[in-house]
Image (cartoon, rainbow, N blue to C red; front, side):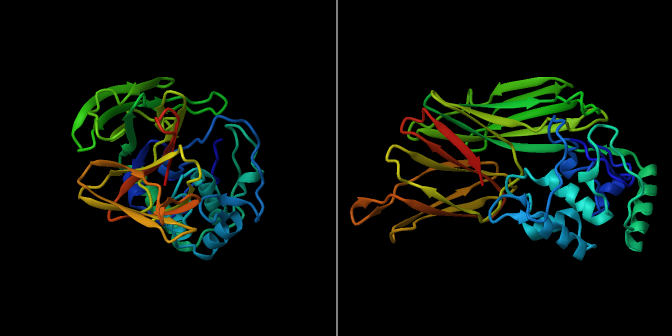
Length: 377
């Protein structure tokens, strides 16, 4: 869907930013210039749903409803979209709700009711019923004038995906650049640089290519990665740089990584850095199930990562620790706890922490890694 904003989007268009757009932090952003400049979520023609105050906007953790989100926006007119999301922890885990969150932010800021808009590329509205505060009206005019003078700057995006290799296990990365004809606008062409690093941060694969409109590339990024014979699962990282070559939208160019095992396939999109101190509850009732935790250091300095494993039914616990130099990766198996000489079954609490920015994934597999699934935290 494309959400058309009521106000002119300050000449900030799709894959390019103006200088003023980079400096501006407090204006109510339009949903058309959405988070990370993604203008489209999916190729669908289904009508938009009118949300009630009881509906959840963000489903992660305890969840955040539309009512709480819009009330916070209305009560804090000086806060930017990112500041509102940080305050409520909206879109800070799986990021699936960000486009809806920005539409709700714009609606609450400008008085636009996107749920009432028709579908299709011609969906536009007249002037909004609400008026912005004077300071925001002045900022809009000022940044609009600056945007008209300064040249546009392409937005360079860097995505990070984990690489896993093991017994009949390989990782592929998929990049596509399609745009549904029912939506209207076209995606931009992208210059792509793909760089793969092993667990120690040493590069072993690099590719550069152009991702044209309608193109799709699937690359086996685990091929050639050094393996550790002492560990059944080896981890690395894939750094994907995308730079637009012309005007257009991001389209569906968000990369995905695919884990192919002997008897299963799982796929997951790349994501921004994870929270430093998340937690989750996992079950350990299946004796043939194995669980792993993987980290990638995405920062420019060494980072300490920790995972506390605690049984919720017994006093048994353990701690997984590692220090990762810059761009290094680490994977460790989450052990089955023991209490009074017996393996502990039932739910475990996993508490994670990191002293820097990381990408973190939990993997669940069977004994020989023939079946495997992954999720990010």
